[in-house]
Image (cartoon, rainbow, N blue to C red; front, side, top):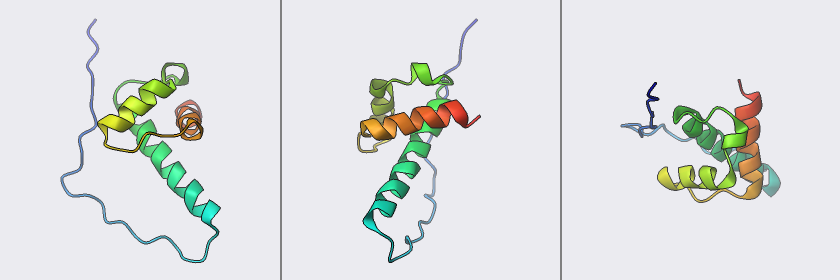
Length: 89
């Protein structure tokens, strides 16, 4: 049985970004952006057929980030991606 590989295509027109609220501590912005990056990577991995966190090792997550033109994620972000795949069902 052949398995079809689905790749995430970029949007024709990017979504409009809203500015983040001002006055928060720097750690809030760092964690917020880390969560957004982890979500984008988890969605891309799910689109390519990675449904088990055990198959999403750091190398695969970083290769997906490279394919999406995202800076390589840290080990912490990679753990967040696996957690999203595991508990985001």
